[in-house]
Image (cartoon, rainbow, N blue to C red; front, side, top):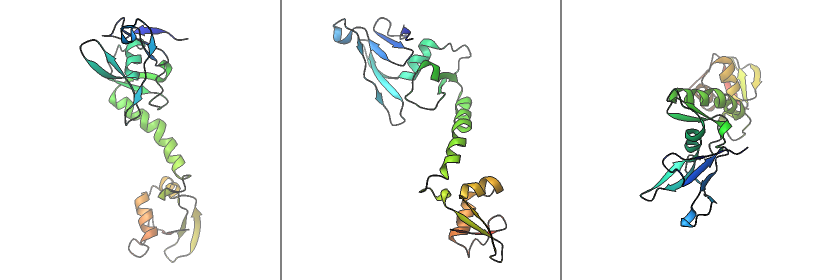
Length: 181
């Protein structure tokens, strides 16, 4: 259900609803309601242009929704998109947070997913298959992706890649010789 509220500082001129739609109540002084067009900046946040007869401002829609509908009793400065889709400005997707909480959310929720998916992206260097050998070049096993070696053995991907590319300069990575398949 859409619930509408006036936007602070623009009372009786603009309203915002729980789905992130911003509407003008007096579009071009015609006393007609009109849904405002939004635009995205380079970071994929949606903006609208609001005017109070003195000046025009570009305002982020997620901030308008949060200020109108979510209580900020702890006075937190930032707004987190729970599903990390920056143009999804629905009320249930937003929450007030600190800078640290926002960064932790990004790391915990997204980094795990992305790092697990990197190995399936065939163009990414860490998705290459790698053969593992003893120091005497006796074959041990084939790893599906460089990122698997890094996670399992705690060896940096840079070290593994260097060992694969420059076999004679960086002789081993984690006590084993390696090369791309």
